[in-house]
Image (cartoon, rainbow, N blue to C red):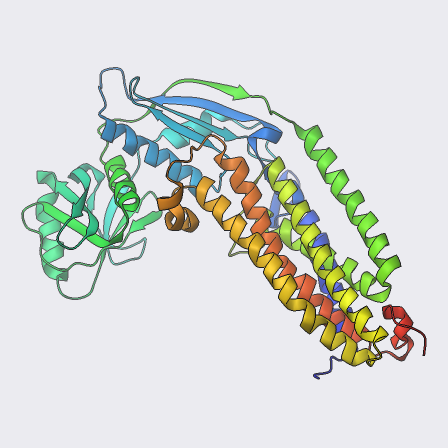
Length: 455
């Protein structure tokens, strides 16, 4: 059995407390009226429409333009991509083809009491900047722009059973595209496609395109091919979206409901910590500390604390997901503590009981959290942004689901998934390190402290 040194408990416990404190408070500096935020905290969370309310806006083409369905799909693709780029997942978006309008609802931005909805609407409705660039970098040399693209259409290749996208170029773009593809053909280089600052595709140049007609091939699904065509067409739209009307939306539940759920979660944690400490003694104390880490990690994954995880829109179902995942964390620690107690009462040594207890409890904990993660992935795939990995994987199964509740349910799935991952990190790994470290101290070697009988 690999021994854990005594200081490990203090190192892990201090790191957990620091994570919890910083994830809630954040780190920022104040210079007069200027605030520089280095690490976002709880006050920087973007709350969903159900909690803070938001904006309801209708976009339409100019009055003198009769837009086609393909153009309206492209307009919707622009708005959806920009919402995703802003990490706004709690939005409602649909297109009314009969009246040539795109309706979108999105939440208020957190921390801006003087939030200007007109500026936000203007940003969403701006004409997309579509560029084709040499290489895969955002600063690559521009080959053609959106105005040089006449149209993009999805197609199905029956012979190879694959989906792709065909491009038709305007005369203004044929010469530049022919020169670039002739020079890059067969070199393994790509011409990447960008909408604003987002890379939407990076097809490899296999042959010279001199007639203004090209095709983009790859391992596309039907929905992916349609989505890519819509995004390319969005950059070739001959019009700028106009705002026909907008209004503010009152929250369906409100900040009071959010505060009640948060207070309920705090009281639940205190009650759970007291209970597991009384029943399981020292392992219960360790479990309570590990739960703090799980809570702090879940908050951090929402605020944008980690540089590789963007900030996230949190709804009331999302808060419920955090509380539910904490319940799974409690369950994991109870299973382990109970196994240690059983091993001690069967006559095994303290070190052996801790080692065997964690080992035998792991399979049950793993199965429970894996099941939770599967449910979370299904929820995120069915009700998440159409460009997300889970949506692409599960689109053949969930194409019939509507988007009216997408943001709220996606938030619930996200917090469940994060909670399950944090449970593996803190509920299993961190608690095991802390308990094995404490067991090295002579004062904590008494089996009674772990639920055993006095020797």
